[in-house]
Length: 429
Length: 179
Image (cartoon, helix red, strand yellow):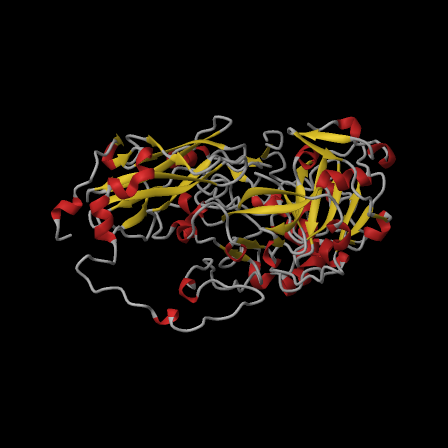
């Protein structure tokens, strides 16, 4: 910072909204737009010592291994996992560290978890998937059987219905974006269309719902309408190219694209066609949304249109003034993301963010926008619009729709405050 | 899109068909490896109880009989009177519009079948599926009695349990068609 000339942007910056939001075109030339600032950020300095050959360049490294691990220097990138529950063995959740990741794909080891009776250790050779109820011929499939069926792959997000529930609480928690919104992941899932198996069993005309239960200790169950089951639901066998992880339902899980994660029953062992939903505990007592008048919404399946800025985000700190990239994730259970807007002044003015690559239906979408931070306090927000025209609501609009007790399907706009010192915190704004 | 009349077609008739689903074409021509079984063969893993009572097993129980089961298996976490403990839900009492809101079996759950289904498959958390069907009927009766929904001597069985009138039976708005 000793050379003032270096802090002067090399080219004129196009401001597109209040408090320093810059045109998307500067994403392509961040180093030009913020040339001085970029140099100031670097650990290198022109008057520093010369580079020397590091020790690891003077000796052979480790050889190949059978199953890789992250660098030992990246060991801090972990799921956010609470201590074990005493009252519900194996229950609870761990969250994806969204603030430490980039792109849209969640590594398998960092995919969020939500279990109701722990992770069973299933021998695939002994596992069976049964299809019964209102079918012409009940059938049983082995894991080996399913591997022989036609498969397809899709990149899809999975979000727990209770994700971001903390953002509905009375006070803004001092936490990270992963801690608040990390019951959200996205992977390439590969498997067998449920419709293929249902056609083999022969669905009877009176069937209207598909009920499913898993092989975990709680035999957790959910019901989905038959039309969805035939439309795009599949039995997931692979996750990002490898067999799905035990915590995701190994050897197989139901995958219900775009819908609340709980319906994608893990360790899937029974599919039963019925003329009504089973009204399992987790679709009555839980995963229903209480309204102010005491009525409740049941079978609210698609996840809402939503976005969140992952950087800068809660518990981060901006170490320099200058141009920063605001980036985050957007998604909708009703299609693809058509637009993401960003505000740096608490929602008074907005600018369109750049969608990173293609916007995929029912997958996470990465967005980016350059921002010139000149040391003034700011409140960063993002607002998503999906392909069906649904717009992410403000937190207040969401809260006013439901009972204060509701913690499901929260999709209100997230606000991150940036202080004059550059500290980023979760706020309600 | 989903085509209802496809569902009843025979397996042989489906072999040459394809479904056009959301712009994709998916051939209904899997290798047909499913092993035919009877509903009886699936009974050992099928614990699903529907609101109309289908799936309920033989057996019966009353709240009076269920107190001993509850005290031994449930009370340590759910409280002696179903009032709940730290981190464990209350089962009785509560209000959906009060301050604070308290959603319990008594105040919130719309179907008695759900209680039977859930207790049999998942409770107690340390030993799920360890209760006999008779014990499940008994403890379900007791939990319902804690909220005054059934009398102490009401016999619950596969015929009477679906007839239990839950206080919040009409409290839910079905959103399943808003996809």
